[in-house]
Length: 486
Image 1 (cartoon, rainbow, N blue to C red):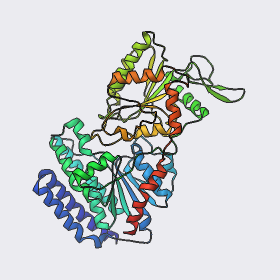
Image 2 (image 1 turned 45 degrees about the vertical axis):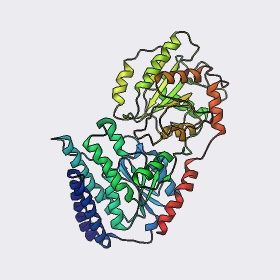
Image 3 (image 1 turned 60 degrees about the vertical axis):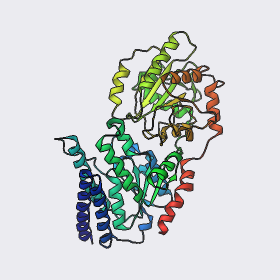
Image 4 (image 1 turned 135 degrees about the horizontal axis):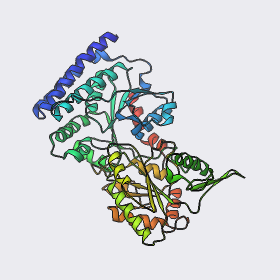
């Protein structure tokens, strides 16, 4: 059976690549004709590749054409599936950022790493892009057709090129169901650097519009995206809001102190000027009773988690911190500030150079990498600079901060109201001047718990909403079970 399947896989793969090549060369009628040809081929060869057995209904492929460690929502999907008895094959890139420890420990989750491919490095950029897409088509076909038959493939979009077409094609061949989880639109992200009128962006938009509706089921992150998918794409989707996982909660002071001490080994912003090793700039461990308290003279701790991409303009935060420094120098009764910017991404070095050029007395900035288990430490406040490329997705980092009962200042965009409700924790801004105003308002009574910051935290504790597990069980599990019955 294996050689037979391999032969059919190669034939199917060549047909798919030829169709995609026509698509790139002729985005109009020829592209549609190529997709029709692919559908015809897909209808002829299912008998070659289907190999159902008693365990098929309990096997799932979770697919990410990106770094698994940077895909928390897909990791949560995998964990939820495993908790309900599914064997999960998690396909994606394995980079510097490790997946969540629970994913690595779970026996029912098998990570199948794939290499990040690159196209031809000579000639025009379009040649590099096309050859990369074609190579990735072959790679995905090889990986997906070699694995055991899956009940369904759950794929993240973006990135979706060429994954959506390949995953759909494999599902048709093997009788599996195909589910797309729409986090955003890939073409809008590409447009941030290329512009909406760029030929590659226009092709990417056509691609998503054509192949997106072919999925069996669709999930999305906001009601605004659900409405847009229905109105402009003809796609009926189920809204699955991001919710904090159980790991995101208020952390005991002892655990916070351990993290502060670990960071103090590398970052002077966390070090205490005295000689006592049991003290940090923020906390003290009392040797007599082994208790930990926060220092009354501690600076305020501000955190911003980022992927350092074009949809987050960190010049806003740096301008706000510069103005905050000037306000404190002018005599305002505000605390000194330690700003921790955590994350990895393409623009990190650019902003690190800008940070290194700043000379502040009352504001300190550091850029450590925090593992998932370190993130829920208590901070004074958080800042989110995510600006949706489509205006239809929401920043998951805000959800995680809320789970830690951390007040958040978030930059405003179209559908942010779906996440930041007027429950006492709403604190949005449009530019760096408004962010400075928000920080001054939040920190005016620091470190007292009687001011606006303390009120925010109490409101968050009182309004703790649904966690990921309950949300997933309510919205996705019924859809998965319907897939099993089909």
